[in-house]
Image (cartoon, rainbow, N blue to C red; front, side, top):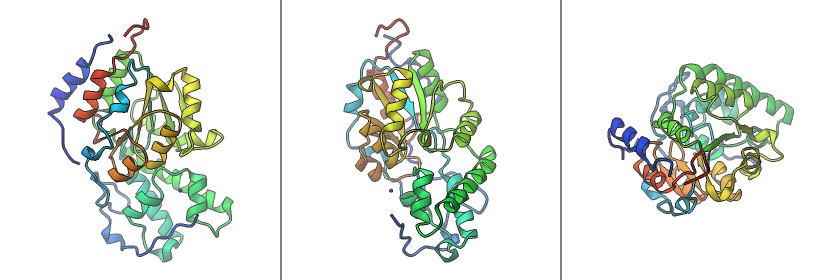
Length: 300
């Protein structure tokens, strides 16, 4: 991962001191063999997907849209790839199960294919695009089996994105409203929040499939604004996928994109206001310093 970080203790001190409360058929094309993947069968290794990796200084702007949010009222979070680097686990589960059913003539999918065609997608949409000629109920059963496999793998491999827990403490100290908004099935979302120790941190969890439309439509983010009583004029979103970014932008909020796995250019093209490597990125800390969160008594 590209490093723009100062040593962790320095960044922790900076964070704690910030402004005291004052998506048709998918064509795979030529696929490489399983040996081309950097993730071994049945295991996940941390590291940036080889084809992605646009550095975070390629953001569309320097966070100007974010600075207009002051005083900050709420922060919304996607889960997969945002709170945790879960894409390698999803990739492993998809690759293994798709190969078992002979998808792409049994040739394993590549990380590039996963990033471009699967990451961030809603299961109903993925079932249609991956299996356009299959009975839809059967395709949805495959997706359910894949999610069960993910939940089996996750407990031993899921890790928080660097700086997440320091940021959560900063949010709690300023009594900011917050919620998690995801296209993941509820069972996955609740498991990931539990493994990250954040079940109690998020008073509201919105699931895309439980809304009229999932991401990339704005419905999940519009719903959560109503549930937590926050204004889009004083709220921003953390996302990691083009689908999620489009949903946030369509809901009228700026989005900070994490370059956890997906290409930075794709995230910028989707409308991200700022690209960051992780929650310790100095660019994020600089923006937070200027947002002057509302305190518990309603003052800046």
